[in-house]
Image 1 (cartoon, rainbow, N blue to C red):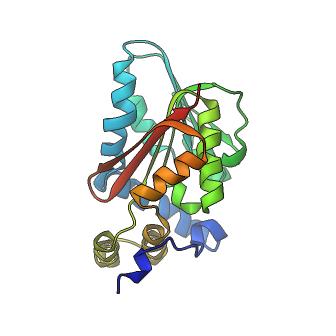
Image 2: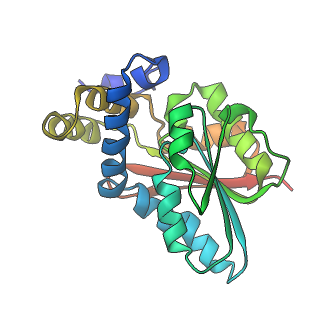
Length: 229
C-alpha cells in the first residue's frame, strides 16, 4: 500500500500540461489561497524568510517570489513589512497570474523560472512555494541554482513532504472542499514531492551552501540555503 511513497512520481499534473479551463484555473487560484492560509505556507514563510528579514533590522529589503501564482504570499509579506522600504516582485509564467500580481506595492514579470531575467545578486532574498515538486530532479536543482544566483543572501523553497498520512488525509478532505482539478493535482503533488533527504540531495546538486531543511506543520518542508561565496 505504501510502496508508492518510496520514490517520487514523475506523472505530470494538469497544471503543468495545461489541461484545464480558464474557469478551473481561476477557482484553483482561490482554492490555493485557502490552502496557503489554512495548511501551512504562511506559517512556513513567517518562521523562515520573515524571521530573517526582521533580523536584518529596519533596512530596505528586496524579495523575489518565483512561481508566484496570484501573488497572495507576496501580498501578505507586503502587509508584514508595512512601513518599511521594500521591493517585492513576483515571477510567473502564466500571463493571467502575472497581471493579477501587479499592485501598488508589488511588481510582476512573466518569465521562465529556470531563466530568470535578472542580474546576479538582484534581490536580498528569493523564495518559491509549492513549486519545486512540479519539476524533475535536474530541473529542480537548476531552479535552486538560478534562485541562488539572483539572491544576495538566502533562498527558501517551501514544499510538501511525500508521506502517506498527508496524502490520504488530503484526499478525504479535498473531496468535500475542493474542485476535482485541485483535488487530483494536489494529491499528485504529494506523490511528486521530495523527502527531507532528497531535498538535501537536490540542494547539493544545485551547489548550495549552508543547507537547512526544516519541518513545518501540516506536512510542509522548508529548504533554505545560499550560493557558495
